Image 1 (cartoon, rainbow, N blue to C red):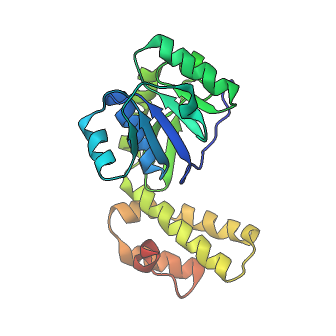
Image 2 (cartoon, rainbow, N blue to C red):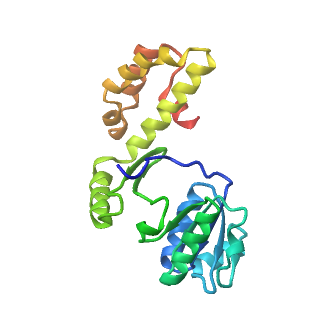
Image 3 (cartoon, rainbow, N blue to C red):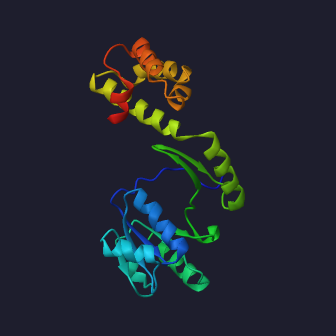
Length: 219
């Protein structure tokens, strides 16, 4: 296996996107979803990027890339159709030991971006190691049909239960059987069918008093 699977925390980290077209815009939006601090360098920019810059949500530098743009950045994504520029960014980033992704050029990257299914805090990543993005997209669409929004709600509820148990000074290892029991009860179907009373009954039987579905998903 060539690539090391990892979920990267980029909250408030400085991330650079080179290129202001459709692809660059999509990369920016994903970075913003992950609460990164985003700078875009591009002579031209999409309407969406211009609007984001006008609202001070991103920094937009309207000129061509120069090597010093990488200074202080955590990662860089290059999304242009200029092959010479793509490889220059790759080489410049390599000198600084930076995380670097060149859109649609896995051979120029030290990390690649998977196709992703997001349901709240549930994130399912699909990668073909850059060999078939089209098939990764097909798998993503299949999984989107299989995993509905109820899975995100379930994960949020589980997280709230876990926090509550930890606040009661329970040892994490002691929780294992509790969560195994909850998972066995097919809570996903109950959430999908809006069977709140059944969910609360399961919570009471396994956890005791003080655990309400409505309260948990609001935490």
